[in-house]
Length: 78
Image 1 (cartoon, rainbow, N blue to C red):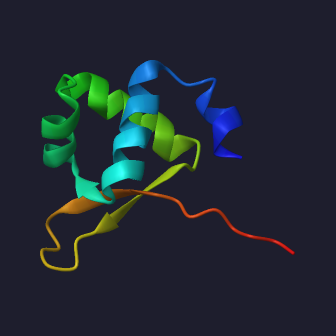
Image 2 (tube, rainbow, N blue to C red):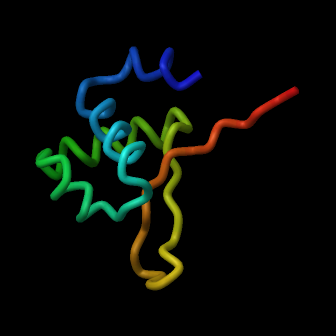
Image 3 (cartoon, rainbow, N blue to C red):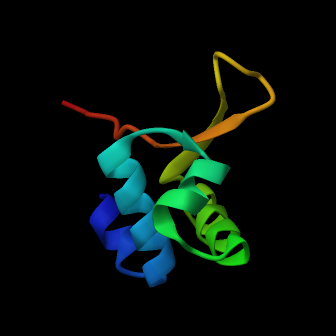
């Protein structure tokens, strides 16, 4: 499901998705450090991923001021 959507996305969005997939949920500032993408590019990639429903933004349970980005878990239908 994700592969067909990711093929249409820019490389920056694919890279952000890959980093989240490998390392799990993280805040934007850590994504900036891990990806070395410019802030504007990261913002655009996250916006696209959120818009397509591949990534969600959630509150950090330890600090409600921080938003975490995480990959949406695919629903399994039988």
